[in-house]
Image (cartoon, rainbow, N blue to C red):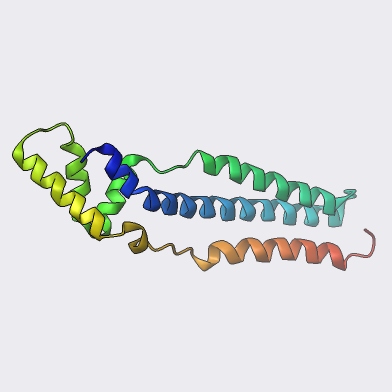
Length: 157
């Protein structure tokens, strides 16, 4: 068993961890852009700000592209994926096999075979549950909706 087998077996888990992180980044970015948009709308109540809707859409668009670029840099590391896999029921088999890749002893070989059997029988990606807190996706929707609703209620725009 080599490094490639471990990484191939854990690839679905790595993708799932990545999408979880990306979703949290997107929702956080939209929360921040929602606050900025709402602040822009509140300020526009007291002073003239032309094309407020357009500026709000630009803020949301910039937020979207910033979230995409940011999420590209948060790919989980090998160590994080291995430790997550071990915490999902593999009982530190993968991390031990990872550290014993260069060891040619008989015990290390038995341990690698045990890890291979465990990885073939267990799907760590299915055990990794993605659960995003409701506050994290309800908050940006409410804030952005409030900002657009405030603009719709104004007659002078």
